[in-house]
Structures are given as C-alpha cells and as structure tokens.
Length: 168
Image 1 (tube, rainbow, N blue to C red):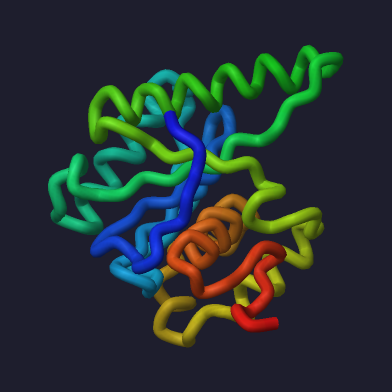
Image 2 (image 1 turned 180 degrees about the horizontal axis):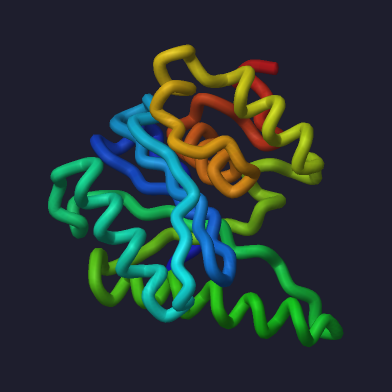
C-alpha cells in the first residue's frame, strides 16, 4: 500500500474501492468517466477480494495489473478497539487485492477526498457531478457505491476535496 498522489492526467483505467468487512463499493473509471459501479458482497469476508477481482475483470476485460487501484482506508484512533479490528479486516482485503491483482493499491483516508461531508451530502454531491449516462452505469445506489464513485471523481480530478468543482 502507498499513500495517494493524484495523477496530473487520468490513467486509462482505474478502480476505486470503499471497503467494509463483508461488502465493498467498487467504481471503475475509464480515463475520467465512470464506466461501472456497484457494491459487491460476500458472506465470507476472506473471499471478498476474489468477488471484487472477478467483477472488475468481467467489466473491464483488462489485465488486472494494468489497472490503477485506489482504496479508502479510514483513520482509526488509538482508543477505539472495535474500529482497529475493522481496520485490520479492511487492510487485509487491500493486501489480498495487491497480492493477486497488482503490485500496489494506493490508499487515502476519507478526509483527503471528501473532507468532513456527511453521508447524505456525499451522495447528493456525487449524484450532481455525474452525467446521465454515468448514472446508468451504477448497479447500486447505496452509500458504498457512491463513496467509491466519489473517490474516483476526486482521483481523476473532476472534483476537489469536499466534492467541489475545480476552480471553486
């Protein structure tokens, strides 16, 4: 894993992950446009990375190492034992993707790309930034999918921190 630095130009393909213990919001971008997005689930947390990799390959047809992978990993504070355990599960998921798909997954805390927006505000702003054809490429409309799409919009420089438009 490596910390994030946004590229000056969008890569040909990028995959953006908003992981949780048993599900993961996934958004695939082709250059600066949303290509496909969904929240993927697995009853077995140890198999979630396989579900993600299979879905991404099926939707892109691209060799997985050729894709740029970006994941949101939350900040966890020292005293919050439950959050630290959840963080371990998220890091394990990202590590499994690195082992099987790519050399590196870039990671970012939520504060780097969405600031301190509430879930409702994030969903609203992401929805406002998408073109109609992009909205049609979203298989789910839950918060995990919107977070993955928002992370992608930020990474390809269509929005700034807080999901504001560039130049504002």
